[in-house]
Amino acid sequence: MFRFDLIEEHGGHEEVVLCTNKEANLKAIIAIHNTTLGPALGGTRMWKYNNDEEALIDVLRLSKGMTYKAAAAGLNLGGGKAVIIGDPKKDKTEALFRAFGRYIETLNGRYFTAEDVGTDVHDMEFINMETRFVTGIDAAHGGSGDPSPFTAHGVYMGIKASIKEKLKVESLKGIRVAVQGIGNVGRHLVEYLTKDKAIVTITDTDNEKLDKVATMFGAKIVAPDEIYSVDCDIFAPCALGAVVNDETINKFKCPIIAGGANNVLKESRHGEMLKKKGILYAPDFVINAGGLMNVYVELEGYSRERAFNMTKTIYTNLLNVFTTSKNEDITTNIAAERVAEARIAKIGKIKQSHLGRSTRNFNTLKVDGR
Ligand code: NAD
Image 1 (cartoon, rainbow, N blue to C red):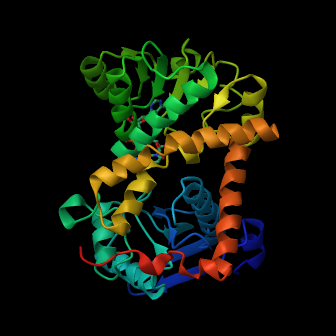
Image 2 (tube, rainbow, N blue to C red; image 1 turned 180 degrees about the vertical axis):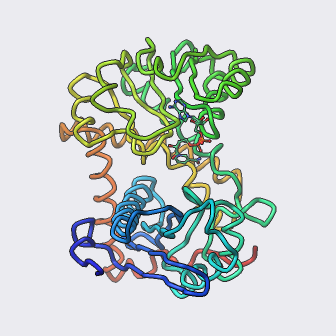
């Protein structure tokens, strides 16, 4: 049975769309959390959920997260997300993604989708056959392509803001950074850091990647379980979520945690524990918003240079969060939420007022012409 109480409990979403198509074997949910700042944007996840309720909770939680991420990044975007219930290894078909794309089209620009866990650029191309409201399209098809270099650059800017805040220095020269995971984001981050003469230690479960990155950038390698206790200035998680937890928290020897991974804190209380230990935490959804900025620029008419420049704003976005955290004596993760909520409240008010009627909304975003 559909559960309205779950929607209330997970953030009071504006709209939840159930999508079904028997011929295409489609069962999906689109959740639009909040469109005060602009159209809802968030990827489509394809996952083997155990039951429909699990899928509903996931899409409600993830779409709310997108509202906060876009708001804290200063973008004119709201939060949304979609989940397709199915096994991404077995159940993908052209018909399924096109049937899903037709649902997105019916929302007429209130929701834009992109890749997420279990979906890739090819799936987006099928969706794109039915609707314009898709971002993160392959560069060969006029889209912005791989977002990870932009995410990594945003993380690099966020690390610079963090050392200014905590260590009172501007330069990364000689700063010791331990990077967990040297995949798409981590590898680019190591490049930015070593260019600035930071001293980088890396780990990954993929030894081939490790050797390659270590040789290319002169980084030191440690085993995956040793990364938490490396004596360093910054721990940069760029692999998994929930890496700040009851087991790891006493291992950290660093004054700063700042990296690209999502959901770094296992629970919100771990943010409180970091604060008590005097470790500055750069909230994940603020520091890793570079990829979102990149797809946002794609919606406006893509310019790589503009996207790259936009990721630089993560520096000031984070400093604002740190200031709010100090002024209100709250953790940085809670401060980030407050900053996002304050922006939504403020812009919501001007949009309602007479003078605010001309404020940009989703109708002004360009989605044609690619
Ligand atoms: P990726 O899969 O390319 O890289 C992850 C790397 O982590 C891989 O090299 C993998 O081998 C390694 N890894 C896995 N388990 C590990 C472990 N236990 N210890 C050490 N290394 C391990 O992913 P990515 O695109 O680089 O994303 C990394 C993180 O950043 C994810 O949490 C992702 O959600 C987040 N993120 C990515 C983007 C983006 O633009 N790609 C944007 C926002 C957030």
